[in-house]
Image 1 (cartoon, helix red, strand yellow):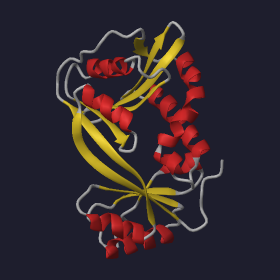
Image 2 (cartoon, one colour):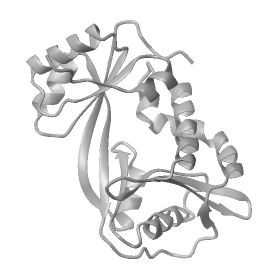
Image 3 (tube, rainbow, N blue to C red):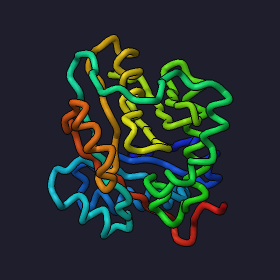
Length: 239
């Protein structure tokens, strides 16, 4: 029998538990039973399972098999063209090493919006550590970009961006909401994409503020993904 679960070495090393990932799209009850048996045979502690909304049977079968729904994500798409926005007192730029250290104090506020923060077996401290690692890792990789917005009082927001098939902003957090500083991060993204089409997200469907902001900036719904976590009995992340 072929292996369905992909081992995730980086996640496993970071969280110090054995983690894998599997595409559950279209999975039946029998498929889920085989996936859980594989997870147990290969001694995975946690498996991320994702699927698109192709009918309720996949989610029901996954939950019956012990997968817990932790997030419904929406990916947004914007057509090509320059971004226009109102003036803001903040200024946008590519992040420096000093910027990255300065934003660490705000990361605990973002943790509840992470799927790791919403899963008690990971927990908020682990979610905060993951966010910090994500941002610092993004600053070191050529296909990623970290942006900062700041005013005379200091940092007003941070964004991380990645280029895969399209340029995409995957994290955006503000320390001063309501200042329109968010647009500065999208502006850097669109500039990086040479005014081409861009993606935003995935955004947690429960987090309406960034979804509404992306809509105002010209983004439309591209796709929806459900994410589940399966855990081996008694296993969790410590600290």
